[in-house]
Amino acid sequence: MKKGIINIHIIITSDICGRMFSESNHPRLIKAATFVRMHRTGDDLLLLNNGQTLTGSYAAEYFAAHRSFRRNPQITIMNAMHYDASNISIHDFKLGRMYFNRSQSLSDFPFISVNIINSRTKEPYYNKPYIIKTIKGIKIAVLAMSEIGDVTDIIEDIEVEHPVNAIRTWIRYLYDEENPDFVIGLHNGDIQTIERDGHLRTEGLDLIITNSNEKLQDTEREIIYTSGQAHLTQVDLEFKERTNSFEYINKHVAPVSIDLYPIDPNLMEKVYYDEKEYRQYSEQVQQ
Image 1 (cartoon, one colour):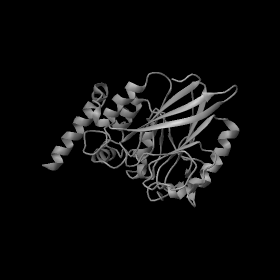
Image 2 (image 1 turned 90 degrees about the vertical axis):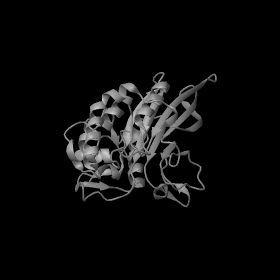
Image 3 (image 1 turned 135 degrees about the vertical axis):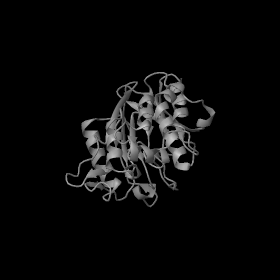
Image 4 (image 1 turned 30 degrees about the vertical axis):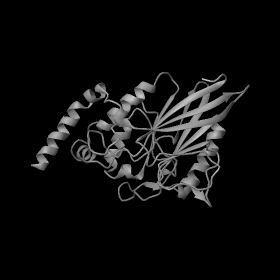
């Protein structure tokens, strides 16, 4: 490490889509756990998930329909990996209020979003919409923005506010109340919904991490696109310590191929009976 330079490591997963076991084309969280464990050498790691998390697989449908009263095995895995926060996607509600509510209530990390709000109170529906984590003296804030959509057919008192309006409100609050050194915005959905004429309308964010398939052609903002890469993205941030502050210097971004890493045997053991139950059910259905 260069003299006077502070490095902070971020690992990002995205679009897990409820694929918790050995299904085809899934992000292999249990393999990702091995990579995370190898890189968690101290307190300088920020582990984030950028939405589209809980629905989209046969396994998720099974546990939502038949075992909604139990802890979601995917949450068991993510708790063991020690996630710091997860963005909320409107797709996470597709299997119903009970499945999402129980999943997020039994997680050791918050599901956050500035623009998924209570339609009556206009406050964030789940949790405080940001986290603060101090790493090596640097106070980092993480907010999350969800894609625009309508979920009232599933949860009638949820409203999805436009992310630009919501993020501006919470950015002001964040700087007034928390005074962070660096602010990260997780964004799920089409990035064009938060831009105008190629420029982002999210002043106050130092870095945006998005799974958008579309990319902005002209922007001076720091953006990391995770869509189309490996299911895991590694980011290293460099800061230089000043007398009374920290100066952001640079970032290094690398996609990670999870297939290069072995499964985490401890996590396999944690969800062994859940997977066995799901496999038995799948075999019976196919007969």
